[in-house]
Image (tube, rainbow, N blue to C red):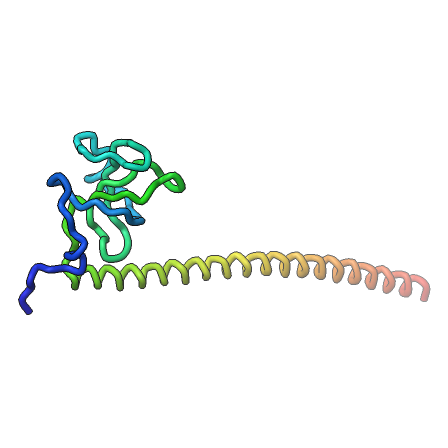
Length: 157
């Protein structure tokens, strides 16, 4: 199938100062040692905080792996200002990233649920071990009482 070079983002693309696309979106990002730190040479500044933008790599959804400049602050102070450095991905790539990210989120949720269940089971296990210890101690006391009574009965007879 021939590609026309268009993407799902082509209608919202706007070149700004030859640097990238400016949008106000919430982008999750992951640390990338090859593209990180502050972009001091940029003519863009974070409009919410008037600071030099940070170099970031998008994580999640259609923009996964796409580099951008963003607010240099961390959550919860971070604003949603973004200047895209890389062009939008082709439609089929964007859809694949969306699907993979949704599956990854589902895996994380299942993992979190299983960790929570594991913690609950550990608590129940500790409570049962405590009850078992108490029962064993009580059986030991009863056994000692029984042996003591047998000794008394034997001595009396």
